[in-house]
Length: 468
Image (cartoon, rainbow, N blue to C red; front, side, top):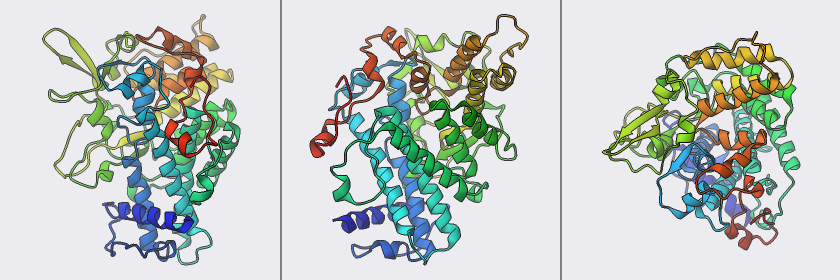
């Protein structure tokens, strides 16, 4: 059973790798007799299997920016959106009253573990393998451990204790219990530290959909921020910020979400569609056109944080839509809502970018008492947005007021991207403000999602989170 599952998984992964324009390989399509040794017998097929993992990120709901992704479902749960959808699964997230039977939650959970299994299959394939070049083995191991670490990070943030699965043995994993959050976080740090030693600084062929050394540093900064390891978070974010030959804050906000923009640390390509579509799922879901049926509009509560209409983010990343009776506002970070031309891909889905690293460092510096350094970082974001800088000589400026300003800037800068507002409110101990949201049923147990009922029916060793 173990080998059968691994074979099927590798066939699926390697077939996804064939659609990569960067590494298109003219090899025969694998048949049912293909085993893991054949997949990893040479650099060509092994590279294609790795390509398949990255392409699958776009097809796996948790990561792709669509309606069942971390980005959208976490944003639904906070106060940046007003709901227009009548889909019950969506309504439950918006009202902070999610049933264990919620299908979107099930897809979020199962998609995450699908990616983990594929990363584990790649790691299994290169273990004790003498057929591949060492450079490719390093790239596969570093990339797979980065993806596994990233995925477990979001699982822990969303569900708390979760099963730690590091193999492809289906029979063993089918009845595994949940592991403590601390054990998962320990594994995440191990994976990322290994990946940092294996991945190069250069992006392969300049392609920012493939992680490099600095991508790992950026995720380490995020993880240590959430662990309240302030010194480590500052150390890793500084590594990324100081890599000025690779990264820059772009003054033209319309260029930030373009494919391989210099602000991007890591992106996901729509090439995973595998057909003529070239738009991101983020743009398809949120960008407004006269014919699109968007599930949300931006809330009045969110729009009010842009109290300065000169904020360039308000002008470039928010789009008004005029009806006969009202003006509605929609996210507009991605300019392409739909494109089936089959032409060049113009936008990639953003996972991590430089602005977040400045905001991470600004926060940890404030928490460490380095207000001057924190102000320097937050002023980078404010200046780019066309806002007045914070005066470090303000008599009323304190650590607490500066942290409030950083929380506000994170909301303005990172809305619709990977659930930042949801996780920020938890880090700041402010989630209770969601009780003020219209139709909210938020309680203290709402910070964690329920373990899906279907998963618990298949595996009776999975316990449920409190409140569900």
